[in-house]
Image (spheres, rainbow, N blue to C red):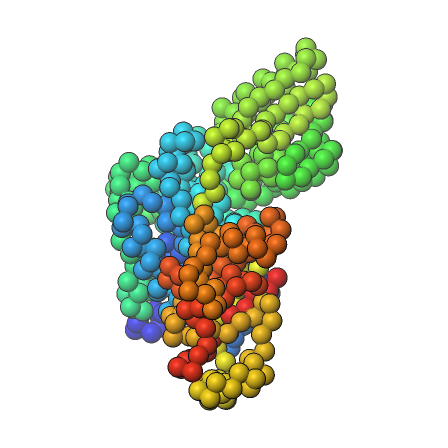
Length: 494
């Protein structure tokens, strides 16, 4: 098979998989997680070829997101910059986040793997704000995940592995093997980043990949496919159990929200033990962003707690993983989030940014605002440049009408892409007409911006320079002048 035929078949294969499982919305944005490795580059490249005007999914737009886990010092910083440059070159807005995963793992007494996974999904959901999140899990990841769940003592829900869609997470590459992905990257000239941690045998997944799987394949060369077929058989069984859970849910659960689930203890204990556990799994998953933190040993503790409460009628409480608290009083069981620890309350939030190519647009993380950098129509820009050369400001502002949320800047002074984020301590800007810079905090106070709005107001940066405190203050360094050769429109909208 020729290289073009291979490329076309993989694109068609992924498109068919997306359509079969209904992975993409009818319209709107999706967030694509991009680590810079082969899997995520293949995913973004394929989706970029399928989504957008004139393509198979014309009303779907992409926004990329990359999290620097700070596992490899300067190498992690270089990777983040490389990903940002590549994605911006494709004209896709990208948000870059940074979390000190080793410190997080130490603080929360988790493994590096678990801390990285939790940080990654928290970051992606913060960027997505409810939109679908595409991740690059593929067929070989599925095998490794099932084995990991088996080693950790997972129940049936773990043995089926990952689903094409799990709430807000979509997996368009789940039917594609690693070999197909590597071939695709080579044929398209994609150069994945090499993350040394992917071969670090301190991580259990890497030991499964490089030690356990080769041993199992010596015993059964077709082991991967055998396990994938078995997972599909188990998935059918799990779907039937989940339908039973849905049927008895209204009988057992009197109230359910993202913060608290209230159950009837007698109604719960009246169910078969399998359904009791699946009901508790669904309830805890609801409280923990879609994934239950319970392991088999926790179900044993829960069952003992419920039996004691039934026999003694005394109140019982139980601390569970994921900061969950179970409280039983009489016939009522409450599952809720426990209070934040002092350390959690005092923990500074990790910053995320939107890397905005010019032209481009995207959601500013942690805010209700969308940022946009747009080019002018050629005839409008030429007329404005001619007026600027004459310093005919009346004509300039007639051609370039400004509002509080729309400004025009010197494009050459800004560069090819901008960074958009919320305020950080120490941020400064040199306002139009001023010789000295000012603290952004002082600009906000002087403008009487309510304290509640200061933390969500977007700031635009060109390199390290703040060039626009959106809605308030433009920087002297990007003002239009008679020497301007290129004009860019910046705007924000809710």
